[in-house]
Image: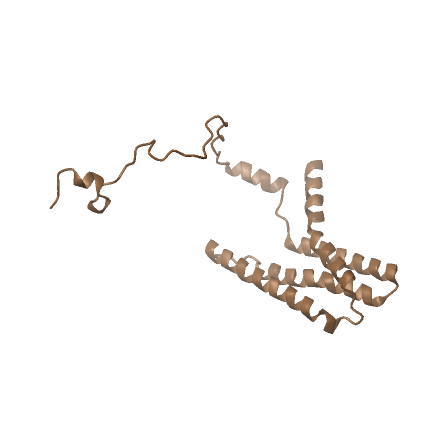
Length: 178
């Protein structure tokens, strides 16, 4: 049996429930703090200008810089220690960064007509592959690198992994000078 006005308050009956504005005060809100300005939608010309000024960063360039950094560390380790085992260890450490990165970059190469959800799933899958391959390479290092030097391997791995920051700094510096 329905009472008069019950459909106003019962969402199942097609009405909607409205709480008073002060029923749930926001305890985290700071009224004295300045409010963020509304987000402005960019025009097509503004987006095209931004893309012209800051073109997208190629993952292949990042991988190239990582590989060169790994080669330099391997050369430096070989020269400083005089042992080829240290040079091979540093080179293998760099390869444990670059080769899985190549797999990820190849797996994430854009395909036309792919839905955004599939792109996210593809990224997660290839990132998992990258991690598994990198860990497997590190586990197999004693078997593949004669005279393994773990410190040199770690140096090659860290320098190669952090070399991606050089690409970002280089890109940022060239964008400021233009």
